[in-house]
Image 1 (cartoon, rainbow, N blue to C red):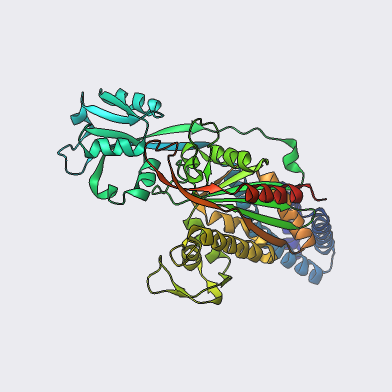
Image 2 (cartoon, rainbow, N blue to C red):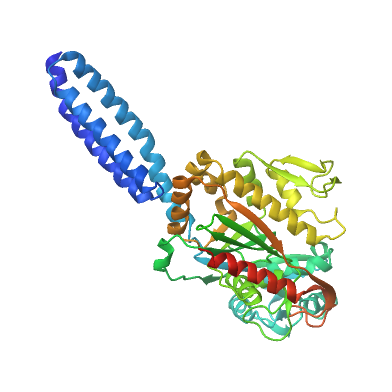
Length: 472
């Protein structure tokens, strides 16, 4: 018996030392544990290893047995925990600053009533296209040669197809969503013969300040696109600036109506609805918000609407107070009651999208969106056990989000929350405007509903954002 223990005790000591050192290196790389806890953890591991060495080297057989049992327990616990740590590290590497490219999907569209069944049948036929899609037209003409007619108005282009002035049209998929707002029968009238993607590579410079915990503005863009690929350029139906100050533990949510009539960054001529800025890319939407409020957007997040459902379910649902009782438009037969309601993910998403139940329509929907976001963030920030499995929280989103936030920023905020555990104060604001029917950049010959910003609202909102950013 003694000889058997003599054979295994040295390997056990070495295995425990190697695993412990590897565990320390992996946790250090993870970089979410506050330093004081990290040092305590190292100390505990060191004490356990010293104790095991002593027990295994003692001559007393009882102590040796205890040492072997404890060694096996430590090895088993380490082997269970290490994959979790390594998977979390991999996830953080892949899931932040994960906007490497944006995609524009172009469709070659014909009338549903036409006899065309393939793109080849459109060889040498007249194709309509928008002024800003020359690159897409060039790629199409690599596949087939066509006669091309240029249009600057999306509705004029669609009408040209309906009136058979052209045999087909080349259109970005996101434009179909814009037209469908006004002409809901578009899906019945058209069919897609051919689709292809154009990719835009996004490069963002890494800054040293990302390693410093500091106040930041994050732009959140919510997409209700027909595409399931969040990398696709699409309208920005939800527009919100989240201002976070870790010095004061304050978070300010600023919402902007999707129909706000603004000059899209980088475009000239007519103003357009803010939601249409997303067609040009997430960076253009963020820059448009910067121009509107005269602020700096540090980072952006683009979410598919289904991401709301995923996250709310993961945190166990949220409690939200409704100011009226109404029948949900998005979940038939479901009634939201006045007062506190507990929502699962599907219900939270329906509540965030609701506008038909309110006289103020989209204005009230903005308040609902803020309520859902605030309730979800509070649930995460107030529960340390949820923060410790934040990898699962974000992993649940899968391809439903893209962000240029680096992992260093996230880990600094997680460390702060684990370290002090302080609650956060949330405040909300939104900007309003006056409804009007005006021509837009995407439809210069067609009047559409827009919301002209109240300048005093914009100035007041801008001042509050800047004030929170500068608080010490």
